[in-house]
Image (cartoon, rainbow, N blue to C red; front, side, top):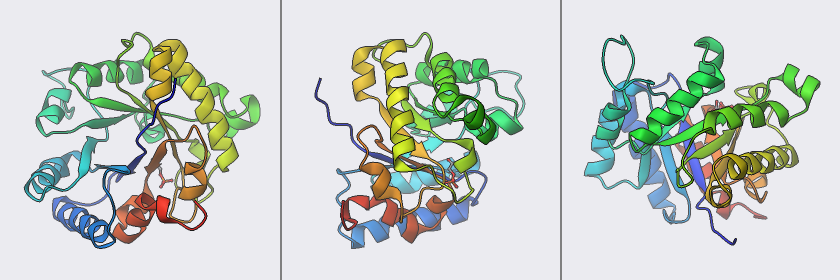
Length: 262
Ligand code: PGA
């Protein structure tokens, strides 16, 4: 089954930048790409600001016709009700969010999110027409004990269970030891695990979903290493943390196709 998967470069801002800084970064990124003659059809760009910045980002993207997709960093398993501090997928959809990050290792670690909670959030996202960006990855200890792919494959299997065959999802392979450490996985490691994760999508959701679903690599991605990941056949993009907060650097990541030797 031949298919072209549009590469996705996603910027996870984590808990950084207020709504005024959001305007500055989104505009600077847009102008930098425009001035460089970037063709927006070649790579999909998505930004994931904090909840409090989403309305600002939505308004700016809409007013200036900026070709970026918008995403949130988390979603409630519930639709509405007495859940103080939670944010419903209904609200995110109303803000034109296309994506939502689910199961990031920081939420698994600091908010005790289990695989079951992650699975419920995936269901909530799909219910509200949002595309879940399902994050999976092994810790350094897991890597030593079980190798690279066993833990992320197991996490993904639970997260995707029960999804319909036409579900639109994105998978992000993020080794926990590579996040924010400056120590990225090697392209070969990323390829090996991303290929295994694609097999899980094919088995759990369906063969066609396995072919069309984009699998991203995340963990210390920067302009100096992005092209080496994107050369791998099963890596369809990147989930970028720290480097997505600097307009010039994130623009250079988005323009990986122009890097020498690609
Ligand atoms: P990093 O974060 O690029 O800063 O390593 C990636 C992530 O956590 O999504």
